[in-house]
Length: 168
Length: 281
Ligand SMILES: [Zn+2]
Image (tube, rainbow over all chains, first blue to last red; front, side, top):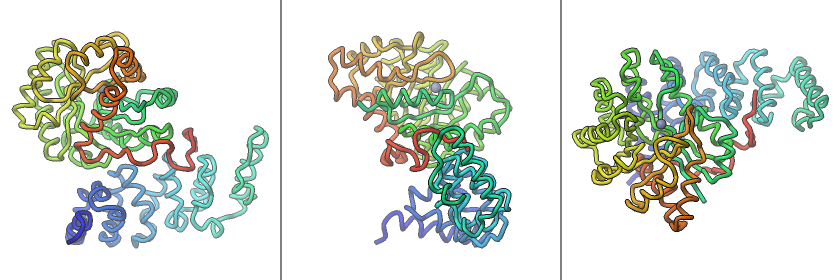
């Protein structure tokens, strides 16, 4: 016999396969009823339905938004979800900001937004290790922004984080 | 000493309050949705407020080592404004969220027909979503309002053990004790209830089904009133276990009926890299 959580997920997945909009009711309860990973599984059952993913994100609480942001790169969305990543970068929640700079954000954010996002991480004490593919996206302008920030810190007599020092 | 404030409006409080609350022993709060000083005039204002109770506020609380859950509802006063009635249609999707542990605050403010309709509709929503209910009792004409409140709860068929009737005083505690509902007391600096009167009621009615809150908000109020009650209880001869029952185990038992109360994740720190202060990006 299956665990109740597995049972819940086994019944939820076909509902989303049959009607993507069924996810609106299932997704908020998915982690507490379907166990860890249930939200990711439900998102997979949407097969890249970006309109539903958008409205799910907009209606989501922090946990739901985090689950969406961290799964975006697996959802066959091309660039359609970059607005969600930009939304997350406007918040003051370090979990959302870090997730926004995961593999999807790194792949699709334009240079300006990406650099601003990285700088925001530094301001929020999010380790730069959280930024996906930073080596590939790192450029002279980002180096200049980080150097200026380091100069500001030194002028204020405050320590420059090690991961910033390594980049400048 | 561990304290659970079962009714406090942290949205209206500062980070200094969070710090002082943690130092006083507060480790968990429930923030019910209520009115602000300025009346809202549209549904969108409520949705942003609900989103803050589900997002920003628990995040802020976690930075100070405090677990934050919420109760959501259309409050009685604003239920009278037809521009806000659409909130009832939005509630079902919000009541599914992980950190929603009750429907509330519902009940009466001015005892109008609109308030009663919203109250009844939300009692039904609580039952559909398997959530307990936090009921506000009116400040004006309190005894009559509380009697009517209990009639509505009874008529709705919701088990009394899933209902908390709040803002009680010497005039209203008896009827709620008899009803089987949980009894809530808001301890304010100069109105409603004070710590000494609260402890007298605990002596008279015992510690079962009794909850003490600060109901601190944007008015004159004090988020440390829960701790003061604990201290006065101890001074009056109650034991540590009585204090723990009233100020921790009772709220855990009441809101735990939702099945969504999560006090496990480390209450001593928020997300690793967020440290002890809200970082400004
Ligand atoms: Zn209140």
